[in-house]
Image (cartoon, rainbow, N blue to C red):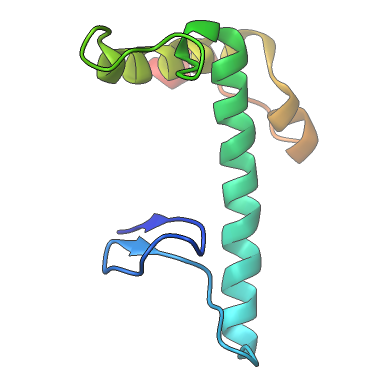
Length: 107
């Protein structure tokens, strides 16, 4: 298991970046494309969370040490996912995937 990030991050065992060797082998190119698609969908989901809970936009409001930032970033995505289960979202529409029911999500 590892975290996938930008090329600006250093390469570690648990922090990986896209393959940047030139020329890329076919499997390396496929991996970069697959991870890029996943990363974009996750960025869309984080955008949904931030748009639903404006106080999570740290540039505007959060103060580490004065706000319980960790708990907020655990609870708010759960609430956003519950809203998605009830009403859908642009990400599920784009990928043509129906979200689970609320009961399925919290089971």
